[in-house]
Length: 235
Image (cartoon, rainbow, N blue to C red; front, side):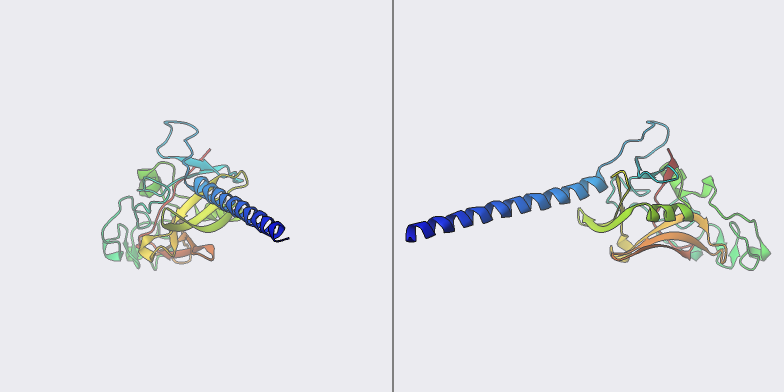
């Protein structure tokens, strides 16, 4: 009887060991899927047509999204930070150094005379190519407010960490994924990405994509602040 009990215990231990190994392998496989899905570069479908690498997320508009931030060399790098409507990163990003005036003395992209210098207005509400950091430094252009919303509405989003960098992994219906790193400026807890769309109810602000570990949304912020830029282009 004792001999049979020992054999039974040994079989139980072996079974548990095998199950634990299988569980570990499965978890590693899931982790590898998330990492590869969000970091593996997707080649430009038309080599040489524009700078940068792009990913197709099967969006209704057919837009391709850049695989990394403007100024970054890999998907998990933060890249450079730009004021809205500027194409060069700066050490000091504030209204005092802003290219197009002060918040109540704007000299471009102003639809309300109370915000413009000496009542200036021009009716421009979307970044022109010469003022677009994505166009100047990556290829393609900065997405509009509506295109950020399309990305939110047509992907699944998960807060994750890749190579020590926090951010969101957005996966399209075709299984392709995009990683957006949270900003080091906000202690890697929040991400803020400019759109190309002016906030017309107050043209000292522009629309942007925000996220943290719990939520993601399209909001607005002062044009003179420095945030990340991610490019898009037509397929």
